[in-house]
Each structure stands twice: as structure tokens, then as C-alpha cells.
Length: 108
Image (tube, rainbow, N blue to C red; front, side):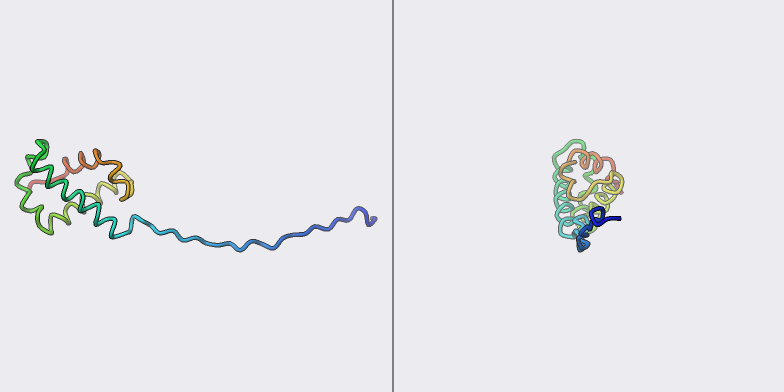
């Protein structure tokens, strides 16, 4: 072999692999509280004004308590679990959420 056939290559050092940690916005308690409060107030408004929700008038006293707020929260969690959407996408799916809530409110 001659010196002309030998080549030397420069191998750069490996890049420092950085790991990025993103916040899971679906676990944000403030976002969940805001969305639940929005739909909680909407349900009370719909029961008072919408004919489709008028059959839930008996539920109104229960909904105006803290248990009613928790009930709306569990319904929203059920909707999110079934549809596999995110908490921040609830307003984008407003009509779907309204239909779901209309069919899943229970008169006790």
C-alpha cells in the first residue's frame, strides 16, 4: 500500500443527547377545573332554557351543590375516556359534549 491510498477521517464527537420533558396539560388541575366549571354552568343554563334538557328539572337542586359539580366532572371524564380527546379540546367538541351530557344525565 502506498501513502496515497490511505485516508484519514475526522469523526466528530457524539452530540449530547438532551431529553426534553413536556408538561402533560391534561393533568393540569386548573384546566380541568375551568372546563368543568364552564360545562357545570352550561348544564344549569340548558336545564332552565333548553327544551331538550327540561326533563332534568328535578336534578337542578342536586346540581347546584358541590356533589353536582363533582357529578359533572365525572361525566366529563367519562366523555374524555370514551372519545379519547384531551381536556383542552372540549370546547372544540362543544356539540358532542352537549349531546353526551344530555343523554347521560340521570334523574335520581
